[in-house]
Image 1 (tube, rainbow, N blue to C red):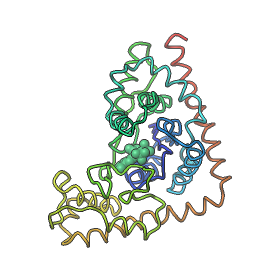
Image 2: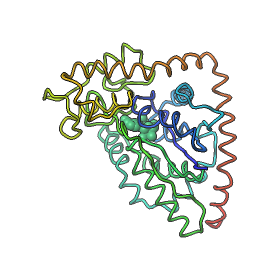
Image 3: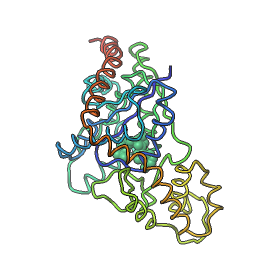
Image 4: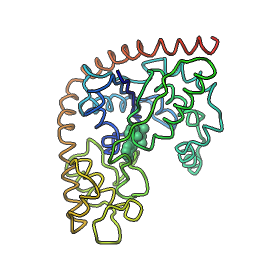
Length: 328
Ligand code: ADP
C-alpha cells in the first residue's frame, strides 16, 4: 500500500493556504487511499525565535484543527514529531550525508535567514539544517508520497537526493519519496501582498485568512484583498496576481477551474463576494467540529498518544537499519 507522510509547523495559526494547499487533500484523498501519517512538526518550530508555552499550545491547536478538518484516527496516524525520537535520531545520520553547500542553496533558508539578519538577529544553525530534519521525517517512514503545497518542492527534492545518496553509499535502506501537489491552490498568496505566499505570521496580517477566522472576518479580509489596476476578471498569474489568487481560491473552494471562472465575472467586487462566501462555506464545518473538539481535550491527547505509539513502531525498524548500514 502507498505510504503517505506530511506535516504542519506549529509556528502560528493554520491558514487557508495550509488548508487548500495540503490539509484538504489529506482529509479527502490521502487518508482513504494510502497508509497515511500526518505530523505536527514541532521541532521545526524551534528554528526561529519562539515562546515555549506558545509552541506547546499551537501544537495542540494544530492537532485539533487537523482532526476538525476530518482526519480520522481510525484511517490515519496523527502525531507530534517530538513524541517520536526516531526523527532526531535519523536527522543526525542524514546530516552526515548532506553537504553544507546543499543546505545553503535552499530558497527558504536564504529567505528566512535574510529576514533574521535584516532584523539584526542571529540565524540558528537549526534553520540551516531544517531540511535535513524534514528529510528524516519523510524517510523514517519509507514514505512514497509527500502531499504538500509547492513551497515545499525543493525540500522534498532534497529528501529524494539524500535517500538516493545514502542507499548508494550504504546499501538500500530508504524508499525514494516524491512530492504531490494540488491542481489548484498549490500556492495561495497573501491577499494584501500577492507576490508573497500566504504563510503563518505573528501579526495577524490582514492578508492572511486563518482556518478559524469568524465568517465576518473572512469576508472583510477577502473584500479588502488587493486586486490589480485593470478591470477585466482574467486568470493571469504573472500579469494579474491578485485576481488570479482570488480565482484560484474560489476554484479550489467550489471545484471549478480558475480560467473558466475568470470569464464569469464582470467586476472585481462580484468576484470577491463569491470568493468570500465560498471560503466561509468551506471553513464552516471545520470550525463547528473544532468547537466540539475543544470541549474534549482528552480526546485529542488520546489520539496523539496512540498516534505516537503507532508512528514509533513504524519508524524504528527503518532508523535502526540506517544505523546498522552506516556502521554503528
Ligand atoms: P507555513 O508555516 O508556511 O504555513 P507549513 O510548513 O506549516 O507552512 O506548511 C504545511 C503545509 O501547508 C505544507 O504542505 C505547505 O506546503 C502547505 N502550505 C503552506 N502555505 C501554503 C500556501 N500559501 N499555499 C499552499 N500551500 C501552503
